[in-house]
Length: 437
Ligand code: SF4
Ligand code: SF4
Image (cartoon, rainbow, N blue to C red; front, side, top):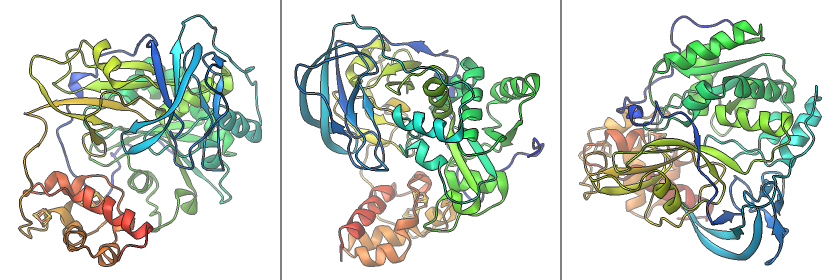
């Protein structure tokens, strides 16, 4: 695929304030491992992993502590050296699951696997599986399984859009770990049986476009940078595939059905670390931002680090008090109040938002303005889904396409009545799964 001159994009969507200036100049730094980590066994799409350690077991960074249970599940590793203190049910941003609690003694060396030189596609996928690599843009889909698609793939896209406001961890990886993540992208493409790939980046990151493009040209790689228009949700899989290839992924189908695969920038970096350095996935780069935090940062965080420790490491709360804490981005993330919740493989950001940044009032009634439908990139009518859910009619909510919703939050963003439309749609999906009326 040739490098594009005109920015590519998709239909509809919104233009929220980026707010990336808070953290985009903060180069990636390392947060030391906390005294205790609380590692959830559910950090991926499928079934929770099954603990393979008991209370009192000695572990090191990289020790397998919970084994994948089924094809969509994923291995979980200790992020510190020490002793398993407990296994207990604790809160996550979206519910509860068992957590393996480990007291850190800071003594043990990380456990690494031998690096793989010139591995076959199958060996790459086996290693990604073994190291627990999942999609780190938020979905948590096991990467090896995605690469093993049965369909013929001819478009491999690395998603460098990072279209959610505030979040800058992928942007910083593209600048601070250029070689490692591009090599990881090569590894992923090879794992899918391809020898070329594209890296798609929004045009509001010109220095990343320049640096990544230069690295590709200097090293004569079979790759290209595609410049995307800055628009939300440009990084959503279906919208990204349409922008880059012009192909539409049918409702209910995966990208492989149109010959495309998408992986995130951080997933590429983790693939490099797993295959070339033998490192299991037990830490990640996370953006900590919002006007409610003293020092907005991009930091390597050990899996299982509680949010309270992360907030403290970033200088604590700023003088303007935070009124909302969000796990993830402001458009797709979850509002949380428990600072004991722990960082996982898919925790791209933690935001502390002040009164000027977050709506905390009561929603008003729908005024039938249809702004939500005009913004929806999936061409849904969110106001109908919302009103059917309010009436307890999940069947009609599903009829209006609740299952096709990608939970991007564009509808709620534009709604003048501040209706909690995404929550309504999530509820409709849940009720539909449970056979709601
Ligand atoms: S209905 Fe779903 S897909 Fe459409 S704008 Fe709202 S959250 Fe996004
Ligand atoms: S944008 Fe809000 S007020 Fe307007 S139709 Fe949609 S739900 Fe109703």
